[in-house]
Amino acid sequence: MRTTNGELSNLEIRNLLLETLAYEESNIDTEGKTFKMYGYQGSQADLFRLLNGLLIIKDIRPLRKTMYGEAWGCGSNLLFENRNINLTRSEILKVYQEFNSLIVQGVIAPGAYGNYGPDLPYFHVTEYGLECIKQKDLLPYDQDGYLSKLKNISNINDWVIFYITEGLRCFNANCINSSMINVGLGGETIVEELTSSFLGFLKQNDNTLALSFEQDIEKPRITISMKYTKYLEYQKKYLRNNQDAGLRALTPKLDNSSSEIYATFTRLTRNSISHPNEIVMDRIKVLMFFLTFVDYCEIQYLFINYYKLNS
Image 1 (cartoon, rainbow, N blue to C red):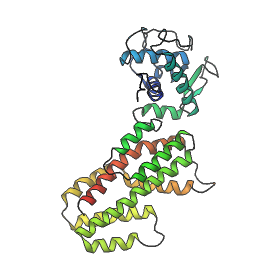
Image 2: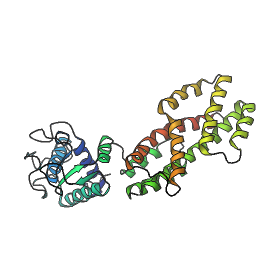
Image 3: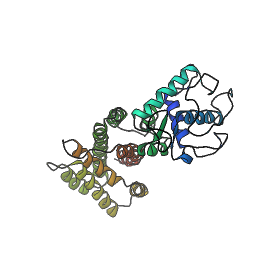
Image 4: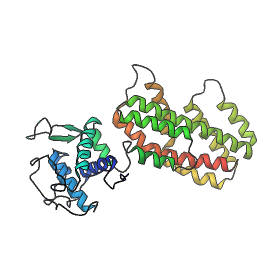
């Protein structure tokens, strides 16, 4: 998301910093250095120098300052407008802002192993950060981009968007358990819509099976994960009794994505973390849930839309 005056936004700069950390080619430094070569650690000067090389390679700006090289872990961490980096004064301030945001969010941490030193300007990429840079194209930090992809799913429920938006805010504020609860609520919303749309589909196409399915999913104290299990059970029964080429074509997508495991784990995790002294979620694990959630939604809404269209 570019600002109205054509400057790079904070979001773009943060993603460029992540891309610089993840970059493995030799063409953004005159000596071919990358963070991977040095165990994903170094100095702020290294990061800013390679960021400048990335700006040049990606042709983001007209070339004002050529690519340059220095010994790894050395050099100044001070940036000057269009001198040692092809950025404006305000963009340089955004670089500093986003660098510190990456520290706050646990992607990088001050200090590096060996002769570097325990404090800034030296830093290292954390274990969590390594997962982030692997997934730099779609991160929960990129809230606008993440939600845009989610909203593009055909007929997605507004409540799913609401819960995931709240979950992203919690995640980016480092409230990990709260973010997972919202992911769980989003998952529950999908399961409720999936079972209700499938029931409508059965009433139109196999009323006997519909009556039995409705009785099973409306039993007292039935959990969301139990509803989902019943849905899969009755989907198989329906396919055994009916020649439905459209639904048969969709079912391999569900198997390949392991959606059953994902939906069940989401529900169980939410139950656990809703009570004190139970499971405390790991930040990397929750990141993986967010990264999986969009694909999960895309697949489940293929089924929901099919059931609604054929009811």
